Image (cartoon, rainbow, N blue to C red; front, top):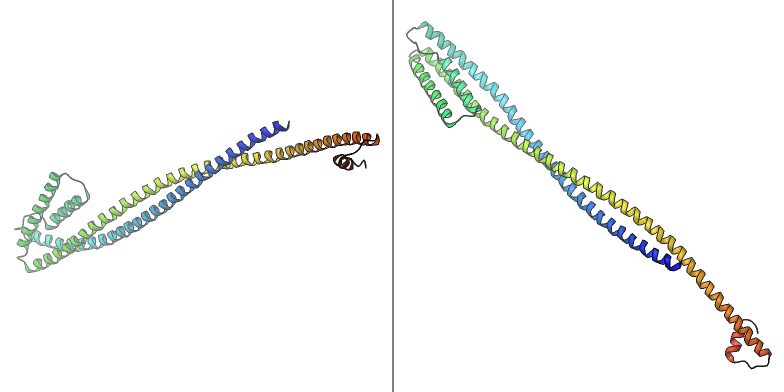
Length: 286
């Protein structure tokens, strides 16, 4: 029975070592997944911060665009008012038969805006540029004719200056609108990267949880094995003590029996050796 218990204890010990090694392996994996998860979470935060900065830059540029558009529209309004006065002068003088400068300017503005905001082929782009060029030449011809009148010349000069300022502001509006779009694209890209790293972080966290739970289960089995080992040790130790005690008792009985035989011989007149005397003393027969 003792040998059987020792063999069973050996198997439990092997099983305990297996659970301990597997637990340590899983804990190592869990630590690795946690480190990767934390790195990805840091990347996610950095991408989000980057996206926020681009959003702020985009919003700032768009706010400037709105403010500049108001200035541009106000200048165009003032220019249009002067051009209307010029148109009124033209109506009073039938010798000027060309299309109104105001109408031409509106067409120029429309085509320039279309050129800046829409996507065209190379041929379409050239066609629009040519139309704008012809319209501007027509404006110059009419302006040259109208400038014969001093008052009209002054109004045209003022209107042209307003239009120039509006055009300069429009160029700035276009530049800022492109800048805002660049920041918007960069913001979208940063958010895309943040979403990707967040998904990867979630996956690493899932693996971490799985590894940690598996490690906890292995540790539980290890503890159970340790408890069984202690139980086996108690039983085996008890059996060994019992066996030892039994062995001692048997030896004591054998010694007692031998001592009684020697004592009997002594009483019969036989001489005792030193070993015989010691044996009789151990058995307390003398």
